[in-house]
Length: 421
Image 1 (tube, rainbow, N blue to C red):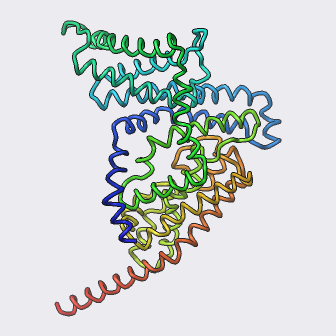
Image 2: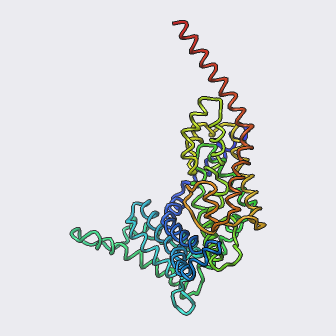
Image 3: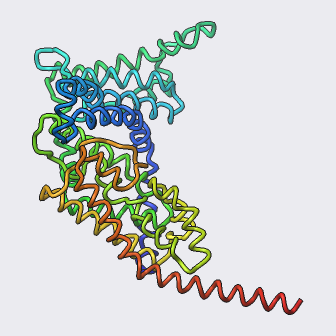
């Protein structure tokens, strides 16, 4: 185990850290955050308008269809919001005017969404256009950066208001960006969205398979075990895919069709990360009943936050980081819960995610709401906590024994020091 961790830290981790801190991926991760409030609002209306209870359907009647307007208006513009958010964040990272970067990216995205008969196509304004928004936004802001760096911009006298001055600074890069995309999409008739979708399709489909999500789980826990926020490090790559899955699931749920994707947003955060990555809420529950004063105190301090998926006090306080004994269940538990949850959804025993909730949503409640009110998902959440606790138990007893011996030795030394004085 130590040899593997040394290899991971020395050979693998530096590359993963570099990827996680890559400017464009960070901008994608931060830029997509602008979509989260709208997805959550849309999800609230989705749940309220489509609860799977006959009495509720009779009570709400046709009003449920009206509530779906909010769902379509939020999920239906994710690509547009992504272009605005990513453009803003990437421009800000280059210390350029973020509004200029955001607007140029937005307009560039619109130019890619032109039909063969030269009308604006809104069908890819939603999650289907996320990857197009990402690529086009990066291209647009990079053109803006080059123009500003090389001083290929129109500058007005210093007395001109900043808002007016910035608008003229944006003129040259906006012209270049729009002309290039116009030539590709309109003059050459090249479907940029379709091409980008094909390019990303292997990664997209891989993350909806059991092997793909298991690899994702292993990388996340290994990063955490080395003291790096594994979930955040991979968000820039994985989140656009999971959001795309969730949007498709939402549309199918509204249309009362089979839910297509398993690993949509909410699968990993709500069904695997029970009380944080590694299902550490279950470790906290064991600490609450520990004979060790240290672990019992830590358990009491960490329990409130663990109920809401915040597990940094456990990760660094227990600690789990670089702890060879507890790293075993910390890695195994997510693999077991990922496999079990995936298979239960694959065979339609429990529902699949159709609504986005805050990642801080507590266990049992979160899975119930995310699946549109599936009580079996709530029961499975409770069972998964029991499974995780059982896996942690023997390893916890090992470290608890070591901690008790340490505490006993400290008490003995304290008594001897007191007597000697």
